[in-house]
Image (cartoon, rainbow, N blue to C red; front, side, top):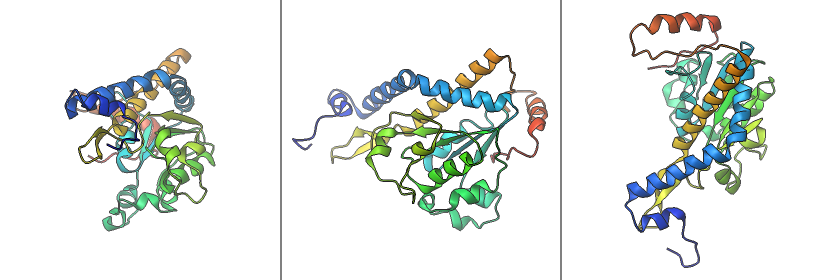
Length: 266
């Protein structure tokens, strides 16, 4: 460790515990900060979701890289709202007819135009709302998506790390980030570089960004549920497809948004 670099909380913890204990302590502390410090942003995001769903709109979710799992947390899952729709770069293959090799490059999210091609495969319109997840928020695939849907009068709730985003340059031609182009920003409190367990060679392992962002996703849903209940508005949620008798009522409820919800692959 460099003598002029301050000791991090994770490194202090590591001195008295193993890597698993270090990760657990650091991650749990981060999640606790999200719950308390991001409460106003979570409530604002939940209200935007409630606004859309109460008026018959759809909650769209989008993410690239590991943030795809955050978007998936909101869509077509047990206990989640039925009027939800997932957008993903792999839609270019699933629904856009492109060959699989065109999306195998993990750096595709850095290329301009990707978001526009993905968006063209979905019915996203005024009255809807979109959650966009990205730890850094600097790649064109997320920055462009935010700008494009806001141009359609669709509010954007951004989920990611402000600490990381402020420490690195934007890769978008606008020199802005996802968080500069959002109506509500929820900070996951993830540190720069994501990983929190120090290694002997000076590196770090075990990231917290997905863990924290998934918590944010469910908190947004919970705040929306509370707001809808306050307004006396019922929006159906999915029953687990792995429980008896769930398939028929789920399918019946989906019919109210027929044609606007892309099926999520197995």
